[in-house]
Length: 104
Image (cartoon, rainbow, N blue to C red; front, side, top):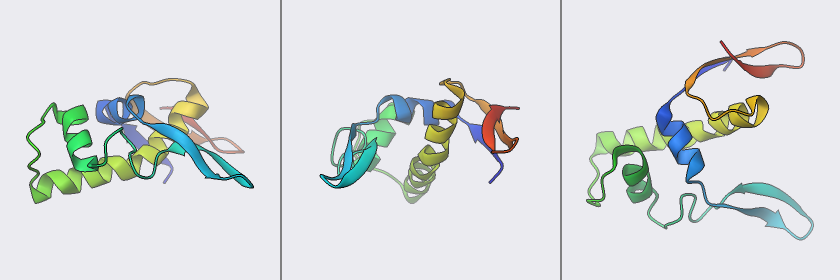
């Protein structure tokens, strides 16, 4: 993927990310907690609250599909935030050698 649309939802999810050390004493890296990436154990409830402001605990199949997509896209969103140093929604593209994310 050489372009990406960073949505306000991606920014909101990254800001609420629960970071931890991912790995063991022989190696690893900082990352989102595998069990509680946004603080609680029910990822759908967390994402619904963060991006939609809902706390009902009920999620349609369409909601779950959207939340799964947003969560998966957080990898690219995090790469962009780290490379650009900005938490800004918008259109980003990979440019240059080595490739770096830049705002289009």
